[in-house]
Length: 220
Image (cartoon, rainbow, N blue to C red; front, side, top):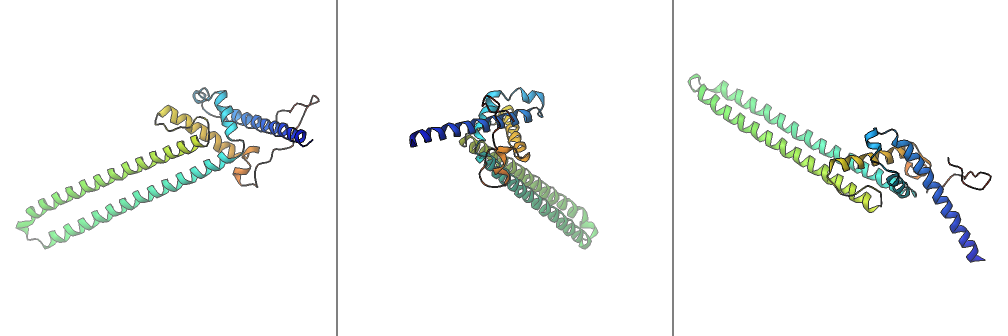
């Protein structure tokens, strides 16, 4: 008897999983229509179906939310670092101008051309240093953001999300961005399966299923 009851429960669980998968797939297909037509063609039914499977228990929603939060914190940190560098350069330029003005005021007229030539060399050296430091900062920002993208790709691949793997191919990156956008929109819309990721309660519970006269689930 217990074995029979367990088998019934497994069948019921399978039906609930299938219904959830159908609901998610339908929602994803609807969201895909909002993307440019050129991108719609790259997201096949199989890809969307596999993505819906990965989203079933709500874990991927939480992973994506965490990755986005880390990305925003990283971008904010890098922006502040560049801003601090720009402020340092502004202070450096102001101090140098003040230094040159004071030196010229104290300089005897016949020595002024020599002083100005030396100051021009110093100014060019400082500007070169500033330029190099800005380039180094920009390279650091690009490398750090590239590392974050690779981390996101690897994390989502390990989570079993279809279409995600480490790549630098522009077209494949755009495809992954579209998939992330679909997940984010599904989250924002508060789709049934996205409820847990939106912080609206505990683990997601499926709505009461609707059936037709033959006992088959009715699409939402």
